[in-house]
Length: 262
Image (cartoon, rainbow, N blue to C red):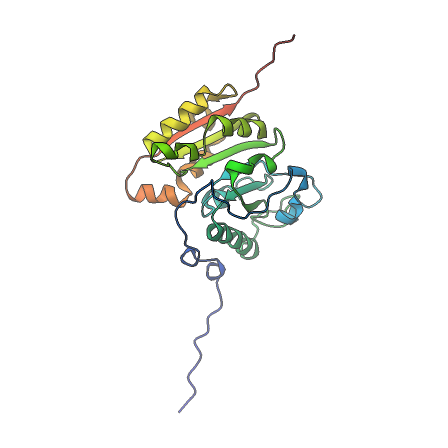
């Protein structure tokens, strides 16, 4: 009787990517809990070269910040579109942040470069993630006026009134976002909860350093690919589409307010 041939198949790039089922965790985390996280004392204490080794020595720092990045859909969608722009995801849940970290590492290894760029050695070298509580330590990561985009995609709605203080948009937090966002930079928000949409929109409208900007204007400025990714790339956004739900988008531009001379 002849030997049975071993059914061996070469590993494909997709087989090397992490599987979400191994990283499942609760949909949301309490931002006021002590999560035993280590934070940098200041942005200049961060060794960004370890996050973006292909950009080591360039002095570059993140320009896009995805707050509550979830499983990293937006980051992965935008990274190839803006290969010279550093992007950072912030996620508080340990399993989810580990998934994104593993996903980025796998994509860097398995994805072949389609074109040579001057400072990167391959795709997805410009994207990274930190496990962090942005509500408490956002300024610890970003110096003044260094970001050109901040994303809040399908954040926890915290439906109960007593939980509204845990929402990611508030007057206090908007001051921190405005500090890190350069004039002309954009805040992108999207949700499938109308009440939360109105909450975020109203707070941003009432904050003196932000002004609303419509989708048509942003597309005319060349930001159409970003808007498309905001709508379509996240796990939450795809779930809303499958359920034929509504998505509420609101974008705001950081403005510079001239101080009156004494």
